[in-house]
Image (cartoon, rainbow, N blue to C red):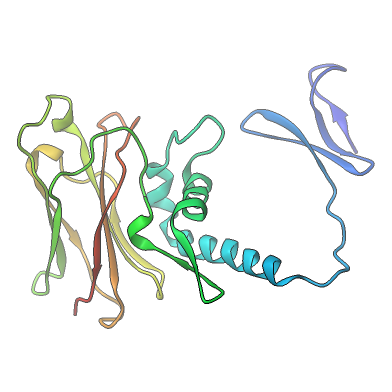
Length: 213
């Protein structure tokens, strides 16, 4: 059953015939009911479905990180959906008919804040932690209170180790507990910054894919 909200001229909510009224972030819209597929799926359609499925699967473990990293991406999209859009448009490639994610092209955080300078990472097997360093010289007063965002991602196992409100930018160093699930599986490492008021963030920087035991 459909209904009008806020009077007869308000937005439609619900089903009317072959049309459904809904809203997203307060924006009303109409969509048609899905039609049952009867024809054969083309190779192009199959590849496109694989592309979308891969993007969703690759990003799903990163939800808590990209939720902050893509906060305020645009007026209509942020968080996971914004990260997925960026991945689909900027960080995927078709290789021998199969879609692949290009980690070094992916941003797990997107924004106008200044990014990390001369960032690096090392692994301490004794302490089982990743040690991040970055240049903390010549900072603007406002930058000093930015906090580091750290992430290590083992894709095949879907395991992530992360911190979204780490050490202040002025410290130049932070550590992240890390226990690799599979020593033979590469670890993708990213770093970014978020402002102290959590209203803006920097683009992330990909520090590399590593094999640590």
